[in-house]
Image 1 (cartoon, rainbow, N blue to C red):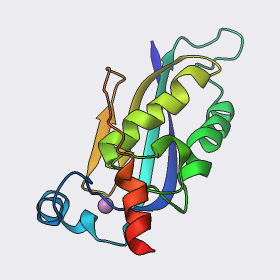
Image 2: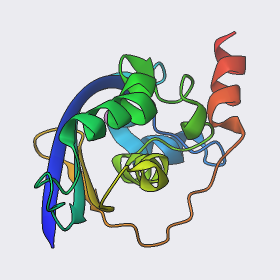
Image 3: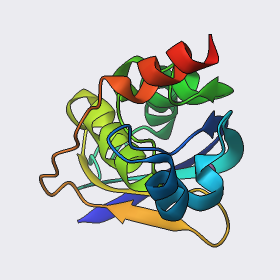
Image 4: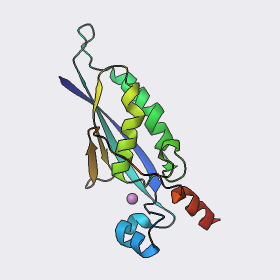
Length: 154
Ligand code: NI
């Protein structure tokens, strides 16, 4: 088996909070990432696909196709966006690096032209990142994560 990785960058803002927590709980849990009007991160995303090289091309996956797919289903949707409001597939999700990695996986998994998705590594900063290998994870969606914020702001 051979593992091929494509790296991509995006910048996005988010606010981490759980609408079922009190303000004090949210502050204690999410600290700076609980900042009311959000804040930004420069994310680095690494997507690894595994497979056997095609004998005719030597490719596990054509990296141009992987780049285009990644742009279409992830990067174009999240780059320069607010992750609490702007992204259809993140609606209601607490946009931690963990939850983002799992939902990015779901965006990509069944759309690869060849090979099999092996890993998603997502860096929120040089110091903080997570890895996901596709084990089942259930991620709650809180209707209020976006709506509550909008209502209060208005
Ligand atoms: Ni943050």
